Length: 297
Image (tube, rainbow, N blue to C red):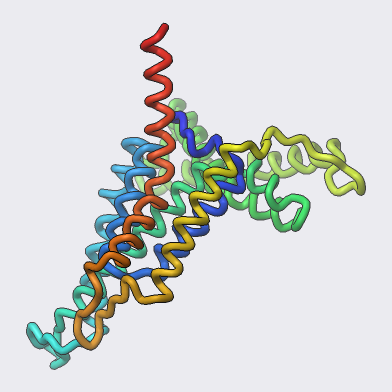
C-alpha cells in the first residue's frame, strides 16, 4: 500500500474531511460540483488503491453509471424538452436524461469516497474517536467494517489451498463443484467461529469493559492537524454559505437552468475544489519534501 500523507493526520481530520465531502457529494447536484467531487474522489482512490481502483471503476462503477442514466428516463418523464416518445406513449425528455446522468455520477462519487474512507479510517482510528463516547457501538461498527475485507481475504486463501490439492470449486461436474464449494464454506465457517472465540478471549484478557480501564493510543493532536482542520472548516463554510445564498443554484425540472459564472459562484467552486483536492495536495507536498531531502543526500 502506498504511503498516504493525509492518512497520517489525526483521526479527527479524516473524520471531518470525509463527513464534509460525502455530505456535499450527496446534496449538491450542480454539474460542476459533481464533476469536482468525482475527479477528486477518483484521483484519491487511484492514489490509495492503484490499479485496483481503475479495475473496479471500469468493471462495476462505469456500468452502474450507464445503467442508472438509462433507467431514470424510463420512469421519470418530467421536462419540457421532448426528444421522442417511448413505446408506451410516455415522453422521453432531455431533462430526465440529464438528471439520470447527474444521479448516476452522484452515486458513483459517494461510493468512491466511501472506498477512500475505508482505506484511511482504520478500525483503530474509529475506536479512538468513539471508544469513550459509545464504546459498544464503536466496537461493533469497527468489527463490521473489517468483516467483509477479512472474510474475502481468508476465503481466497482457503480456495487457493483447496485448489492445490485438487478440490477446486470451479472445475469438474456440478456435483464436484457443489461438494468442493460446501467444503470451502465449511472451512470458512469454522475459521470464523474460531476467530470469534479468540477475539473474545483476547478482549477478556485485556480487560475490555472494566471500569477505569485505560487505552493506549499513538495519535497525538499536533499543530499541523489544527491547520488542516482550519482549512477544512474554512472551505466547508464557504461552500455552505454558497449553498445558502444560491451561488450554485441549479435545477433540472421543468427546464435546465442554473448559475455557472459570477465572482461569488467561482469563489465557491474554488473552495469546493480546494476541499476535495486536500488529500492530493498533502501527498504532493510530502513527495516534494522527500525529493528535496533525497537530492541533498
